[in-house]
Image 1 (cartoon, helix red, strand yellow):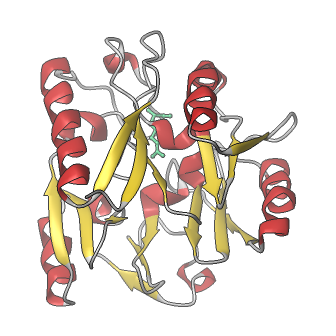
Image 2 (image 1 turned 180 degrees about the horizontal axis):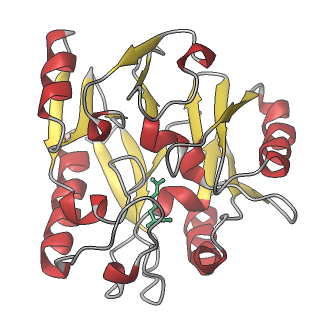
Length: 256
Ligand code: CIR
C-alpha cells in the first residue's frame, strides 16, 4: 500500500533550545509540536509514504530536522557534516537508521561542511547552497561522491536564508519554486516560479501530483492548486519558529 519510504525522527524534549540564525526566539509549545509532528507523519502516510523512525536523539534539540544529516542519492547515503557543530551529535543515530535500510554510506569530512537542507535534487541535477552551513569543500566532496551515480552538482550562492531548501524547492516537472526575497539569483534555475510567501517556497512532492506545503502559505497553496496540483497543507508552526520547514522533517528515499 505504501509506494515510498521516508525517515523521520521524533522531536527532542529539548526542541525549544533549537538553533536560531535569522529569527528571534519565541516560546515553543512542546505538546503542540509533538501533535504537529504526528500530523506530518500522517500526511505522509495518507499520501503513500511509509515513515520509518530513526532512533530518538533526545539530547539534540534540532534532531527532528533529520534531513540535514544525510543526502540520499540512488543506493548511497552521504552522511553530512553539519555546519553547526552542535548538530553533529545527530549523525550516528541517523547513519545507523539508513544503514539498517541497506544503503551504502559515505561521509563529508573536514574541512567540508554540508547540511542536507542545502541540497536540492531534481533528476540528475543537484543544486547545493553555499552559505552559513555548507561550504565549497563540502559541495566539492558531495560532487565527487555523486558523480559516479551520474549526478551533477551545481553550487548556488546563498546569503539570505539558512538553507537552500528554505528558499527554493522543486516541483515534479523540475520548476523551482522560490521566494524572490530569499533566492540570491533565480537565474541559476532553468525554470523558476516566484511564490508570494516565504513559507510557500518549500514543498515536498508526494505522489500523483500531490504537494505537501506549510499551512502558513495559503496564497501559494492557491497558486499551486490553480496549476493542477493537489495541495496537502500541514501546520508546522512550532518547527517554523526554529527555522524548520516541511522538507527538513523527513528524508525521502526516492531513488534519486
Ligand atoms: C537549525 O538551525 O539547524 C535548526 N534550528 C533548523 C534546521 C532546519 N533545517 C532545514 O531547513 N533543512
